[in-house]
Amino acid sequence: MRRLALFAALAVLASSGATAAPAPAPDPAPVGTAEERGVAVAAARAGRDGVRWGRCTGQHAMPGRARCGTVAVPLDYARPGGPSLRLTVSRTAATGGTDGTVVRQGALLFGPGGPGASGMSFPAVALTPAWKPLAEAYDLVGYAPRGVGGSAPLLCADPAERPVGPSPAPTRPSRALLREWRAEAERYATACARRNGAALRHHTSLNSARDLEVVRAALGEPRLTYLGVAYGGYLGALYADLFPHRVRRMVLDSPVDPDPARVWYRGHLARPAAYETRWADFRAWVARHDDVHGLGGDAGAVARAYERASARLAARPAGGTVGPGQLHAAMLTALHHDEVWPHRARALAGYVHGDDRQLLAQAGPMPDAAARAELAAREENTRAVYTAVRCNDAPWPTAWKVWEADAARLARGAPFTAWDHVRTDLPCASWTGPRQRPRDVRTGPGELPPVLVLAAERDAAAPYRGALELQRRLAGAALVTERGAGSHALSGGPNTCVDGHLRAYLLHGRVPTAPTPPCTPHAEPRPRPRDLPPPVLTPAPAP
Image (cartoon, rainbow, N blue to C red; front, side, top):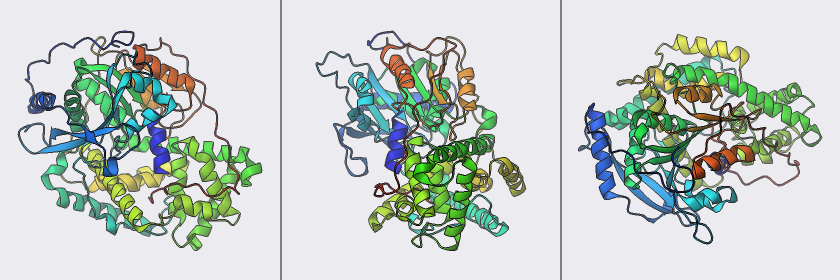
């Protein structure tokens, strides 16, 4: 499932035409804050060193012509001569087209979501038809942000100690379960501080945005051409605010809300309602295909079937490993990408009708012990970076009664994820160390080339309000909306209207004129009969 979700996420104005952008104005003199001076020093050093490209091996191996390397960035930009981190980067060189006549436009750097996701596999999209025009004109470049994957990986707990097996549903937690969550969150925050020491405070969104500037210099690009998805869109917005003179073209796909008042706790409060809407969309789709699924002819009937399945799993976990928590986690992934709907519907319908093979294949543990250990390590790394960045970035409430009251209020209208969101971010209530004040991202007219923002109206992971707010804050930004749809990350996806805008912008520098007509939604997926063999998918992670 992770591989599907990754490629769904990847299936993401300078001069017109295919010529390279003119050379930018020289960097301003390295004055200002210590961090600003440190970025200038690190970028100059990276520009001299470049990237030594070699084979992509181990966890970074991928099909095609991709090459991998590293870029050194300071741990602390206020001390550019101090300890450094090496970020892993990957690249597929521009093909120039079948006849070699397509002019190379430079590097297109992909910013993954998260915090905690890696973009190292991005160059592999060069092998897909949807990305061929861009792969002809651009080097497709991915990277792992600081702390992620091979980029000085951050861990807060031993992956081997991660709980496995059936877990309760997070939708209506008991008082005992809430106490367990609070204790677990406190232990995790304490362990993270103890394990990582003073280095932990440098895992922030601002430092990751500064890292983009160093990577740009190492690639030898005078200006940055960037495609950021979800949280990667927020990093792009920070970069645009910090280094507007260095932006060539920038696509911010399904971005999170950059309003400093909503980074991150109030943004956390906005998501359950969006997830509830998307959960209703999924159930309505299942009901429209009741001839295949047999779970009921309306969304309410499907919800009742889900609740019955959850209760059965609580009494007797499927295969001894899949309980209500695993069922919930599996269904949650369906709310990010509707291409997953047929698989999750098959799993639920199969279980309700007495066949748990689909559910075990999609939500159960991987059968191979080594693969399970590798997945656990990857998930702990993701969780550690996600937690560290969000907790360091902004103030969070420290009183449990605030979290509990907000979650209880939200759960009255959005029960599917309200409490789950509390559990995910609760370590921030006990986080130690300095908290940053979120940057007030904002550019004025003429400070920045036109930026292209892509968003789906019913996106659960990045509610549409965030795209509107980002467009408002980046003067001259154009917003392309997929109306009536909710898949997260649109670039290279099934909507030809959205992809047309993406290519026109990246290949020719054209942005749609305002007001931009919305794109009609892409076609809904087709259901898959229950009697097909189970798909070969990596199971969804336990909550």
